Length: 302
Image 1 (cartoon, rainbow, N blue to C red):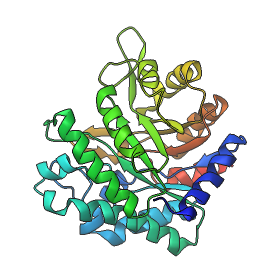
Image 2 (spheres, helix red, strand yellow; image 1 turned 45 degrees about the horizontal axis):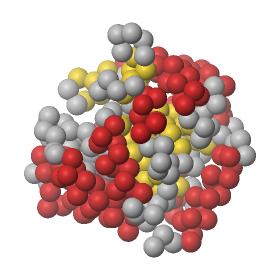
Image 3 (cartoon, rainbow, N blue to C red; image 1 turned 90 degrees about the horizontal axis):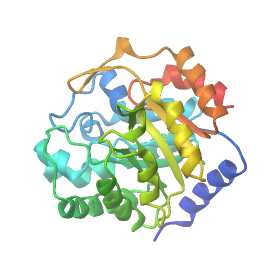
């Protein structure tokens, strides 16, 4: 059963969104701990920080909270069961997921930002190229979200959704916890210029796919900045709920980000002003977007 404190905190923030306010979320977590020297897990990207370098991960959350973020996302994007299995870390599945949320909560407590939300980010991305059957993904997702909910997450964020069938599996698992759910899509334009999920399915079809399920907010995330305006245009045509954006920036070489290739804070803020004008209310950053970006973005959101 979801605690009343969690629901009060979440309801308060959603009331502000529905009243037209803008909300700052954090920047990158995975690439930020990488930038600060945390080693990667082979086949589980930057998911290892909660156990290998908890102080660094907690400090990243604290930095974003002190800069004004009202939602911080736990470092659980790469801690789903199949990624950890590929990395040889399946026996620590519960520990990775529990500590990911706990460290974000500890950061909230240490910064006295009691109204900030801790969102548990989940995905089904594969770094090994192996993909489980939908039935196996379902059972693994159900295990993961129960751990995240028990650890105290305020909401669950589906991240980097690029496939409708897998998105629905994760969504149903997340909704079963009773926690509120936000869905984040990663998009690009196809050869005809239509905005699609990265696997080629049109974004509007992905929105229609969860029409009978409760989704409180849709994010466009881990998407190239050049595509965000077009994504928002599609959302305006088929989605009536609130919208968020946390784009990424930078060149990846293998699984590692080239940090020198990321957008400047000023240019990112210029782009974000346009997203706000298009109706985006929740604004932050994904891979490559650092505290220095969020520091300037806070003034834009205000």
